[in-house]
Each structure stands twice: as C-alpha cells, then as structure tokens.
Amino acid sequence: MKKIIHFLCLSMLFYSGGMQAAPPSDKGFDPIPFTYQGQLTDNNSLPTNTYDFEFLLFNAASAGVQVGSTLTKQDVPVTDGIFQVELDFNIFFDDSDYWLEVHVRPGNSTGPYTTLSPRQSLTFAPKAIFAINATAADVAFSADIASAGPFWYLNGNTGPGNFLGTRDTNALEFRTNNKRVGLISDATDNQSNHSPNVLLGSENNIIDPAAHGATISGGGGDPGSTFCGNGGNQQCVNTVLDDFGTVSGGWGNYADLYSFVGGGQANLASGNYATIGGGQGNKTADLYAAIGGGISNFASSLYTSIVGGYANTASAEYATVCGGDMNVASGYMSTVAGGSQNLGSGAVSTVAGGYKNQAGGDFSLAAGRQALVRDAAATGDADGDEGTFVWADSTQADFISTGPNQFLVRASGGVGLGTNNPNGHQLNVLGSTFLRNSTDTSTAADLVLGGSSGNATDDGVLTTDLSIAGSDLIIRSNDAVVVVLDNDTTSDGSFTVRDGSGTDLFKVAGNGDVTIPGNLTVNGTITGTVAKKGGALPAPEEQPTTENLSHHQIQQLQQRVAVLEADKQAQQQQLMQLQQALQALQASQQQLLTRLRTAEGDVHTQKPAQ
Image 1 (cartoon, rainbow, N blue to C red):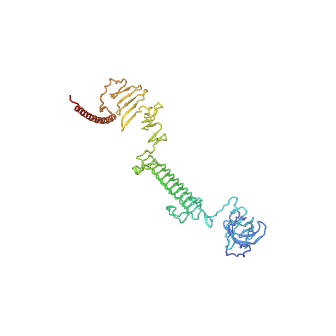
Image 2 (spheres, rainbow, N blue to C red):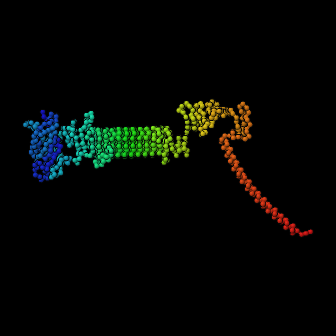
Image 3 (tube, rainbow, N blue to C red):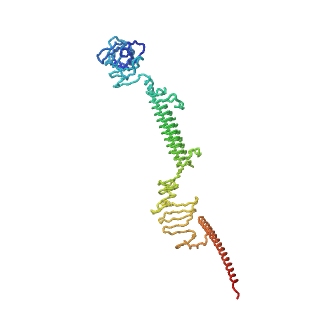
C-alpha cells in the first residue's frame, strides 16, 4: 500500500519572464509563481519513482472556498522521496490567509488521488527567504505544515529521527547575505570512521580538502595579508592543515594534525598534537608543544611549553618558560620561571626569575640579577658548572661561578641565617652552627659555634662535639697547626694541649692541676706554689732572648721599643729647651754682674779723700 505522508515548502522562486502573469491588481501585488519542494514516503520507505500530483488553494484550513484553479502535475520524478514542482495559481496574493491541499497517486496509475490532510498554511511573513519579482513590492512568503513527520518545519519538529541535512556526500552549506558562513562536508578517517569537517565563520577560512575531522568554529582573516602560517608567507585566514586539527576562532590562525588554536591572531600550531590558547604570533613546531598565550613566543621542541609573555623560546625537550620576556629555556628539562633575558641552557637547570641570569650547568640554579652559572663553552666541561647555585643581588655586574657544585651568594646587605637583620655583617647567624668535614655522622664535628657551656649567661661559646670521643679542637694559622686541644672525654673534664707534631705541651686535670712535661719559661710574677714534676723549676731568665720569644712577643717588644724611642725623642727635645732657657738665664746673670761692677766703680770715684 502506497502512502504519502508529508510535504515541505522550502522555497519560492519568482520570475520576471517565462510564465504568463496576470495584470497587476488594484492591491499592488503581481501573481506570484513559486517552487514547491516536498518529501513523501511509500510504505515507510523513501521511493524513487514518478508520481502524479494535484494542488488546490483554499481560503480556510478545512471546507472553505477554493481560490484559483486546480493545478495538475503528472509523472513528477521523485528521488529518495524528494520532489520539486513549480506552481502558478495566477492569482494575486495579498495579506489574506491561504491553505494548500495536495493530492497524489503513483505515476503509472489512472485511479483516484489520495488527499493529504491537513492542508498546509501559506501566510505572508517576514521570516521567509523568497525573492520577489523586480517589479513587485518587497514582501516575504512562507509555508507552514501543522502535522509532524520527517520534515524540517519553521516552527520546529518533534518526534524521533528528525534532522536537517543531506542524504548523499554533498556538503551542507549555510549562507548569510549570500556568503558562506558554514560548510559541513562528509569525510572518513583512515579506519573508515565517519569524520566530517566543520567549517564556520568567514567564507575565506580553509580546511585542507584532504583533511578529515577538522574544525574551524569561526573567525576569519584577510586573504590579502600574507605573513601567517608556515614560513610566515601564507594567507592570513583561519586554516586547518591536517586531520582533526581545530581552530576555534580568531584571525589568521593555523592548526596542524591533531593540533589546536583557541583564538588570537596569526598563531601557528604546526607540530602534531600542539596547542596554542591564544595571543598573537605564537608558534609551535614539534609534537605536544604548548603555548598559553602572549606574543611572538616559540615552542620549538618536543613537549616544550610556554605559559605566556613576550618573545620567549623553549627549544629543548620538556623545556618550560613560564612568562616574562625574551627568556630562553634551551637545556633538556630546563625551566625559566620569568623575568627578562634569562637563559636556562643546562640540563634540568632552573632560572627562578630576575634579569640576565644564566643557569648554564646541568642541575644548576640562578636567580637575581646577572647571576651566571658557567656553561660548557665557558668551562670546557660538557656539563658546565653542574650542581652550582648562584644568587646575586641587584648590583649591576656579573656574578659568575668558578666551579661545579658551588653555592654562591652576592648579598651586599649581608646574609642572615635565623635572623632577618644581618646587622651590617656579611654573615649573621642566630643559633648554633654545627660543622663536620665528613659524611660519617659517627665522627666528631669539626666545629660547633654557639654551643652551650652549661651557663645560660655565656656568649660566644666555641666548642667541639663533646658527645664524641676524640673531638679535638684544632686551631690553625696559615694552614699550620698552632695548638690542638685534645678532649679525652674523661669524667674529670681534663684535656691536653699538644702542638702540631703531637707533643704534649701541658695537661689540665679536672681538679685544676696543670702538668707541664717540658721546661717552663715565665716572664712576670708567679703567685702561689709552682712545682715541676721530677725536679725544681729553673730560675727565671734575667733577659728573654729571641730564641724563646714567639713572633707575636717579638712584635710586641718592637712596638714597645718604638714607643720608648718616641719618648726619648720627646725628652731630648725638652732637654734642649731647658738648655736654651739656662743659657738665656746665664746671659742675663752676666749682664747683671757687669752692671753691678760698673755701679761699684762709680761709688769709689765719688768717695772724698781722708
């Protein structure tokens, strides 16, 4: 049993010639011929055959009065259920409501027609897309179908199996202002899976014809600009170059195999599986590279990443630049956190930020300003100064490492450990400091600074590790052993002082007794009783000689002599002054004697004779 289900009026075409039109009406409208397109089913299938149709126009949805004549279309070809006919009722359509009634029968039949129900409404409405005859008024025309079925209605469809599209491999195109805004084309991948391409946005956007599963969601560009894409000489329109590439939008962006560009301008995700979130002029060039945004960044190697910033480069596998400008991460797994003009060239190296720093050694770290860890070229070692950490303050000068595994700090304001105020010192440590020249924790520490002496009021305590036997305190001068304080950890707290050759100088027992194995030379006063083990003390020497004086003592004596010499000169000056005063006094005395003698002579001259 053949059964015709539903029809859909898709478009009406108006002609300026070719069809006989009635004279203009007093309402100002011309007769309007149109093209009617619909779809039918025959026993729930979409037939390919010929059918006869009758079309009648009424002024009501049911009953009513027929308008115009009945139009008969015989042997109309139907392909996959789709048919199209041209209808001209030779009437003047005004703003009245009209309904179209359709009759149908098989093309090889002379029997009665089957009437479709309900009639289809034809109303004037601004939502239709119909071209009007050049001489007609600007009006629009639409057709609505009230019943549900396998058609796309202007008022929407309900029920299963509804779709808008094609049944063959031809692309489905959408337009506005007669320009393409969407194109969905059929494609299959290498495993014959259906993978259509979706092309939206500007009519200038491009998906490579050989690609499948590609998507451009919008945006556009300028075909006249040619500074985009590979080589920087391609048209600046959104383009997907290979399978499953995606450009979400923006201007002049390019995406390669499985790559993604979110937006922005003139970005190029040319490495497979690469990602660029946005920005301008960013470029990836290898597998799995990623750039979040920014301007003119370049992730050129496998698994490289740049978060953003300006003109940053990540050029070694797994290298990362987090931001800043003109930073370069060229070492394997290197990282530059930010700042400006920093370089991480050593493997697994890090530049924490700052300005013009370089982490050139493997596993090295640089931070601050112009902190430089030397690279392979500077050291002649393939690893550079590996394991070195250089931190530099704001001083405008290079601070360069001198070897591997160093920890270097330039801090003109001082370094504080345990305190936030170096207090003018290059190093200020608050708390005890424990130093050991060995990885063996069972050995004694070389030095303990700030250790407790048991007295809470003690300051500046210098001790050895008293918990470990043999923890000697060695005092050196110019790399020569001056004295060794040997801690024998006896219960009485005694210790022995030895020289660098191991010879005992003296021993202090826990009770205060001092044992001196050799001779004792004393300059000064000895208070108390002094006894030498095994004999009496030698008499003190009257004058010390240079043989038993230390260098420091000689320096002290020389300083004393200089003081005495100065005193001597001062006393001699005073003596000369006294001598001059004496000479002046003697001269005055002589003058007085002369005057006295002269006076006595005058007296004798005047005395009368007797």
